[in-house]
Image (cartoon, rainbow, N blue to C red):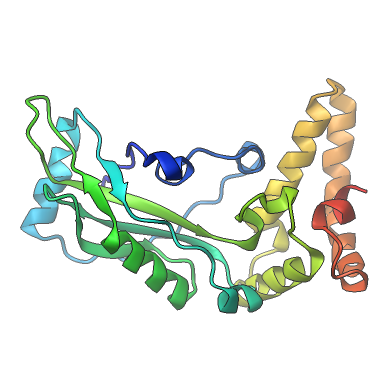
Length: 237
């Protein structure tokens, strides 16, 4: 299933639909990209098939005109719950999302529910073809729920206490995966790597990458001792 991600963004929420990455998120992408596991796709309707076929006809991209992206609820944050949700659906000629579904789950039902409800509440200027006619298309809308991605994220107030909650939940939800597969690990490693690359010393970069896993492991114990410390300070002091 091919889906359209090329939204023009609402001026207030440019980083959400435009999927513009912050420096820290870009750092993560430079190190590793984890493949998404999509939920099983339901049988396609005739309208879905038509919207899929319209992908090649898009001349003017859809634009978000109304709607706000939800934040991570305090109750979910306190449990360490976090993750990415992708909602897919038919972006109709009326500018609403029909047949909306969670195509990538966060693994947290409440976060999936919030993302789905938000996507269904959004309003868009619909896509247009070369003749200026509005056309339905398949659209995918990404949502990120993570304390380390809120506001200034890691550069701001992401503290050890939340780090321990987040990783404890993630490990319980992914018992067969090492913590080095967590997005946050790759974000921090990427952040360090970019900093070392700015110095132009290749040997220093290699050494820094090799030592990071040890520093990451030590961060858990240091965070237990100082739960109010900033994670950045613990990792890069």
